Length: 120
Image (cartoon, rainbow, N blue to C red; front, side):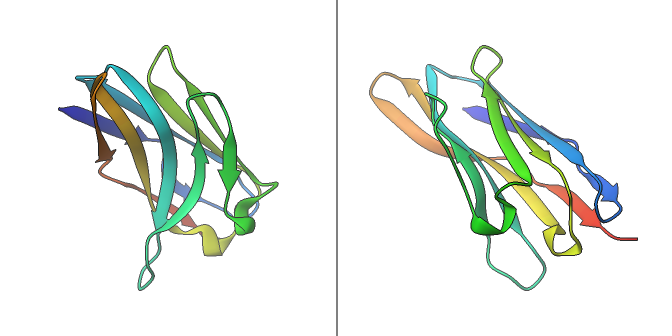
């Protein structure tokens, strides 16, 4: 089994910054894609940013230029640096990882979610 533990959420004023972290642990052979999703009240979960094992990234249009995803493969950790935060960024943010537990078997894992509230 694999566990994803997130940290870094909280309350921030509009225009402020937060950095989310997500550390994977457990039965890990290697990690393929890591990503951050978010779900606002009354809305569907959406992909915010993703990063491949090689470092390729993609972002939802609404966060381009404001958010940066990165990962430390040695620590099995993914980060989301969020700058110029807006009230519409308020949501529960979930970490996602596609993990190989051995060379032949992979599975999807999710963190428990961390709340980000952008409000004055």
